[in-house]
Amino acid sequence: MAKKGRKTKSETPRVKTIHINVTEAKKKKLMDLAKNSNTTISEFIRQAIDDKLRRIENPETYTSGANLNAEAFFEKILEKQKLLEQKNNVILKRLDTYSQIVNTLSILKPKVNGIYLKDKMEKVKNTLKAYEELKPKKLEELSGIDGNTIKDILAYYNKNFSITMKGGIKLNE
Image 1 (tube, one colour):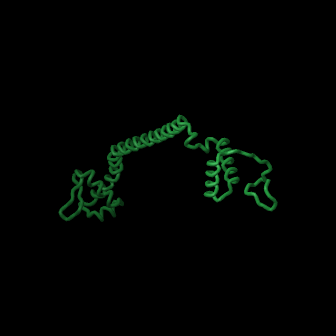
Image 2 (cartoon, helix red, strand yellow):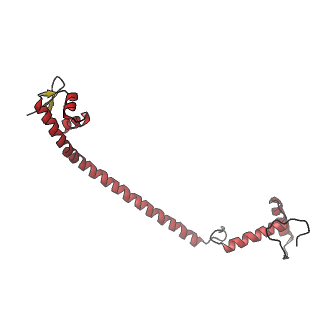
Image 3 (cartoon, one colour):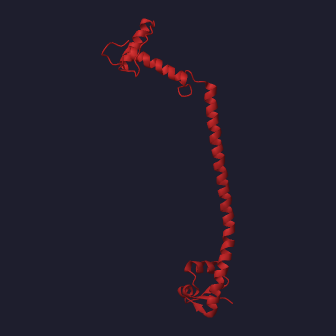
C-alpha cells in the first residue's frame, strides 16, 4: 500500500502486494533498467507486467520476434503478394485496353476525318466553283470554314485542288 501523502503513478490505487524472489543478478539488472527508464524498480516491474498482459490480451497487435509464428507471418506476406498480383493484373488489363483503344482510334481517325472533311470539302468546292481562284483567307471567309480545316481538306483531297503561282487555291475539274 502506498505511503500517506505519496502520489501513485497508476490511475487506480494499488491495494494488493505480490512478493517475488529473483537472483541478485536479476535484481541488479532490473534496478539498472529502472534507473535508465527514470522510474523506480516497483514501477518498472508494474509496467513490464502491464505490457505482458497487453501482449497476451492482444496477440495480433503485439507480436514480438520471439513469439512470431513464422507460418502465420509468411501467410500474411503471401496474402499481400496475392493482393499486389491482383492489382498488377488489373493495371495490365487496363494498359491492354488502353492500347487497344489507341489502335482502334488510329484506324478510325482517318475514316472519321474523311467523313467530316467530305462535308466541308463540298462547301469548299461549291465556294470555289463560284470563283475561279481564291486566296486562303478569302476562301475561309466565304466558305465559313476555319483555315486549319481548309488545310486538312487540301491535304486529304489533294487531287481535287491545286495551289496557283499567286498563292491562291483553285478547283481541279
